[in-house]
Length: 113
Image (cartoon, rainbow, N blue to C red; front, side, top):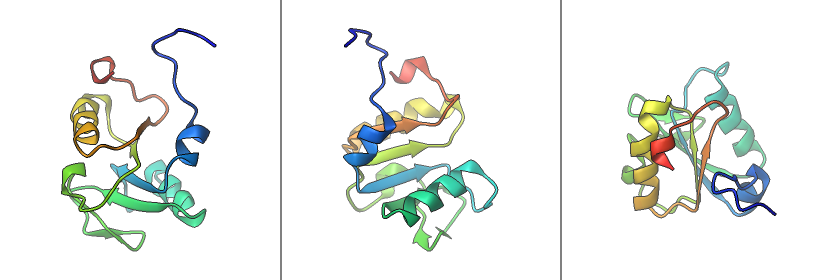
C-alpha cells in the first residue's frame, strides 16, 4: 500500500459502491465516449442521470442542467468535460454528497483535488 495522496481508487471499486451515476457532459451523439459509456452503464444495470444544459432527454432519461438540479441521490459523478470546468463540477458533487467522482482519462484539474 502506498501513502501517495494522488492514489486513485479503482473504477471497479467505485462502480461496485454505486447504483446511480450522473454523467456530466453527456452527448446525444452515439459516437461520443460520453454517450456510449453512459449507454453501457445503463445496459449493465446502473441508473444514469444525464447532465447537460443543452438537452432535455437522452438515452430515455431526463437531462438536468447541472448536478444541483438533480432531485434524487447520486452515488457517482462521471465527468466528460474539459479540465477548466472540473473544479465547479467537483464542488457541486461535494454539495450533493456524491460518494465518487470519475474523471475520464486525460481530464486533469489539480485545483479540483
